[in-house]
Image 1: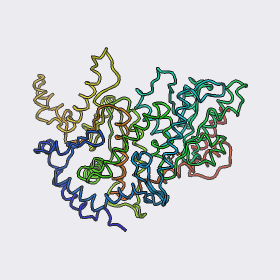
Image 2: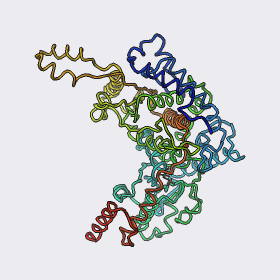
Image 3: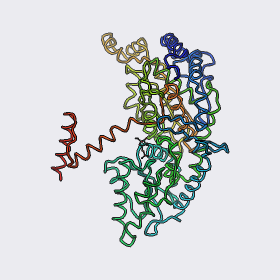
Image 4: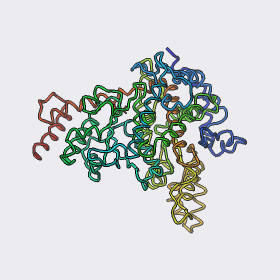
Length: 562
Ligand code: F6P
């Protein structure tokens, strides 16, 4: 059994060191000669500024020591080497193989997985080519114009986020362009509202489910099939139309066939791909349909470049590792409960939602990899965020003046593909100005003396100055990272997503949790099955009084509306 995190020499040293660092203003730390250059990094086309963090050289060296004591380099090698890191499910963790653009074999259970990965990519390329060129036609002979991805969790969040981010690459004006849609929620509103604007003749459904047993997805897929067969003209052949309008993305051929989808129309992946790490697999088919297979490959290439950086860079220069260690530092010694991700790019409006699953399903754990209760430190933070500048007018108040420290990541491309005002576009300049200003404001704050001077300069009397001054103080001293890249193209996006995936990996390793299982979602799923049976008229199975009253209320409402 490894040493408990809190008993490592580095963690003990960091605890004592944190007491010394806490009183030092961030602004003072930032002014240390040479610091900014030393804490700005380039990796896989991303520029990452870590200089606005409450750390000194000594902190960074202790964090590197912590990584060494936890044998992080060995863990990274083990992941890329296909070792069984997901101990509770007995699986290796090989999303990196899906974007391995090198000739390097990646072996899991004694077998090189790369030939299989390449074979599925070739099948995806063929399918995407047929749909986009119009060689694949629907049951009435019309070409496909709309694709609906039906999936939830990792089978939705990744591809949905990427499709939104790459909207400029959809080529909607060209013939053969495919519009992607996403249905995840079992709330019938989601499917009904999506189908409202679609024609069955030109719609292709991708049923995306690693297990093909996820109840929300299967119900949505069944309803979509019923919509298709009942709204196509009778000449289309009823159920015979299904193979021309349904594709499965799954690991489970048996269930795919049982659903009625021809397994020839299935793109396969493998149990060593975690659901929340699956956008790089067949689950990314909606992306390839929307932006083209070549752009999808560029996305993989961007991620691969970040993988290579993560696999080979020493800890002191390893950007995902550094970002992860900073998160560990704030969680352990600054009582940081959450982490905000703030993309200054409207196209990244699903980024925080994607990262929430990636991070919180991975590291929201309270036992160690060996099954011991975690004590003495906290694990995964609450991850949240919204694009700037919208967030500024919503929750930044708390970031600036709340009682909690919330480390923030600002993320933005330097150029926008959306030109307005005939090229004389101020939108992007204003957007980026806000990003820079927010990271500055969080750090520098505004002192009581400055506030008083400003109020007096405005002509306020001393009573008003006394009454208002404290309300207008900004403590400052709040840390942030800034991630910039030239454009939000597939390569940069791939690198960005891989950066955050590896950050999750490192944190999970340091906290000694299994980042690759998700038992915490099981209990609610199981209870929902029981409750549904009761709501639909089955016998009571016995609940606590609070739950029983809710079941009764919902059941009664169904009776009255029937
Ligand atoms: O919510 C639990 C979960 O298993 C996620 O990990 C996964 O991404 C999601 O459900 C969907 O699973 P599937 O792809 O098997 O339908």
